[in-house]
Image 1 (cartoon, rainbow, N blue to C red):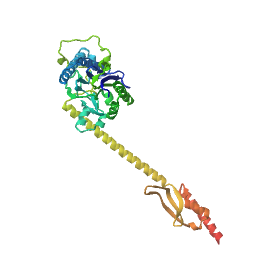
Image 2: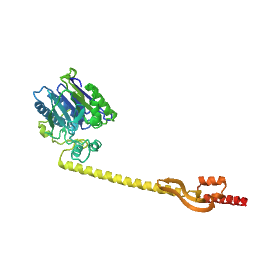
Image 3: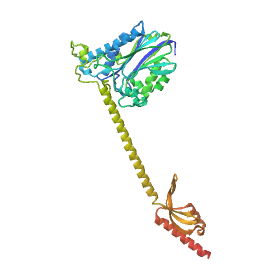
Length: 420
């Protein structure tokens, strides 16, 4: 890594989505990724509102603990602004956003996290995931019900248990303070990257001694190569002895880089407090495919549903396996029946023998057996007929085999008469 600190922020709409609902920020001391949800009408607005409020916390702090408290306050304030926006613009009901933020203070980093965007740290070539996803499948992983590999393809991998939005006036935010030193490379990313590119590939890309922007471009490219079904946003912060001049200029990417545009141009304002607005009736609640409350009853229901799905999969596999085995057995029986409709003429113990079947073996099993010993000595056959019998004569039916034997018998009789 270079001795001068560096940073970069990049965002791409991906290959499937029609709009970018992610927002990213690389500032002087603060770095943020926000992944919005709520469909075309609100996901982009949610991440933009949250990020624009939180970047007000990009300042110099006397301690990392002060920065940690400031981040938490800014995120709560952003949550209240989201509630206000939904109350004044009902068409935005159901919008929400994840937030991951780090603030650099000397040789320490203050961290704030809610949702399933992630913060990684590359130190001495080894990548560590710093945050824990607030998702249903992460609960399953933590409880040992599924593996991390299974979580990558789980049908409910997008279900969030915590998120910013108009559902909770006091959302639970994970915060912490960690030490850092020159050479560390921090990555903040939406699940458009972590859900497509595996950890080993992310580690190998971050480990390259390239400027932050080039590394970010490579990460986005890997997500695109993997199909990029979601928006992809990455923010990289390289810790150096001092900050480079380019890294001092704040950069905003994604939805927050554009002006906010609400569909409803005539907002309905009210004197209600934000805390009351949070629980007002909403025409468009957060979609269950993205967010569900973290209640124990709900978790139990999801776990039971997951167990039912697993049982159905096992039953489907069992029925499919049985059907496949039966099909193979039927094919084997039909194939064997066909082989037994065939015959060939050969020799055994120096006599001409009619065999039923074909001259092939499957492992230790022969597909032919002796059908009839004709009693014709092979020694009495002509040189040509003897060679033919030794090499076997194929017949498509028993009648054809009998005709071959009859010809051989006639030839043998003639040979015997000629010999007299």
